[in-house]
Length: 415
Image (cartoon, rainbow, N blue to C red):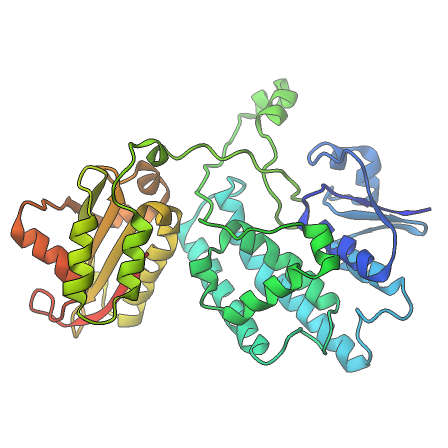
């Protein structure tokens, strides 16, 4: 009897066993026409895994569920495999990193991902905590990889395969380049691993996420409607994407952003961002002058924002984290926006003020709908015909200090 894996073609947890099989020369067949929400609800499947989760591996000796357990089983089918280490201590380290990949990386990514797919209630404090915990884990991994090519020893092990599959969802669905650039050794590790022939054969070509998934509202259907029209509900809720154990879905095509339908603008936002980033001296003469030469008041608009609750900003690092979290959640607008956020004051309470450049004449509605921080600020459109407001724009772009008579604690840029 051949080994048969019950999972969809895009299930990242199923990828683990398929990649291990490539390294060990073991034949694992993916069950044909697997449909999440249908195939895993049949009596035959539930008999293999009472929870109805995927993946499940059928073996001559009975079924195995849980993706890491399946990957371990396939790894041990080859007696002289190098995937499990060459000593007891190496085996221990492999198990250590598998746990780390599952509990510190995957768990936090799933907590971040599921509410944005409408599969769990979206609670901003929960998301913030998950992202903070994920960054902490990635920081620890980054430090370790600064002096190590692989997680254990000098070649790929089961730990690397599981870590790569868990990072896969983050890199492709959640973590943009601006997010991962803080972890350069993790970046190097991930792109090195996914381009290994045995891994690339399963994962295919990979493109990093350009923006964070927008928040989708959860849908709740009355019980009587579920009973009356179960098939219609299943048809409405088309599968979308892959996440933890039991999630195996294909994404819908993204609807076109309304901002992409606006008339072309003479201002090329990326050119301004490059000019801003590359100007190290004579900032006012080069960058500020260049900004106004590029600025298109018909295609873009400028906005001042002021935090409504500055009296709460009594601890400097908490205030800075608050602003950092706001910029992280604004990542969905990176293609259409540029921003400067100033944290002002030499002592508490600290003031938070910002300047934003948005495509179009209004603040984009999808930003208002999906970034809850927007309602925490007062927004005022800049009148560029007013020289005082125009000069205030200049000062905020260049981080002029003192700003409005006060010292700057920090200045953060969204670009």
